Length: 202
Image (cartoon, rainbow, N blue to C red):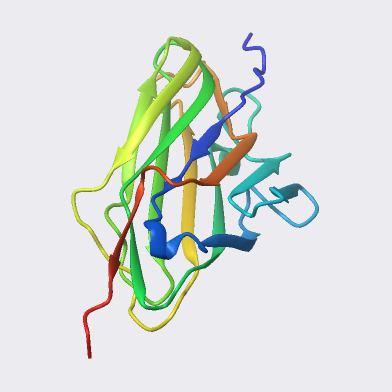
């Protein structure tokens, strides 16, 4: 029998701000999805507005005997409200996830994330990676983007992060697995991961 494991899952987005863009900050966020219904999500923005921690109570996917078929997928979309000088553009560079999964032999878990600015195409992806049981451990994964898509000049729009969790036991119907997203950390630092450039002159 599979014991449900607790997962601390963090995804860190490190934003790079040149000297002229250091007023960039996180104003807030909204959320929607089966993995983050109203009343199951808490968010805290740091005093300097450079970090956002989102805590989930129900972001879980599972499969196995007794589990509802609909339980094998959960998703949540965050819309992160960024503020920066509209004379600049921003593009996502990479994002790192850490977590835990408990999968019996033959059970597969998949993580899929799409990133895009409102009104713009996907940055790249969706980006997908998976694990196959037997697996009971922490994991770490970095999404890197082959295609750079810049935010629109002259306006500042939310960065959307849509994450899907899947678990399937199609190849091993008698076995079970679970993956849970407990927290997501979005951090703004003068380091890596978002790239900035000046908008071209009119």
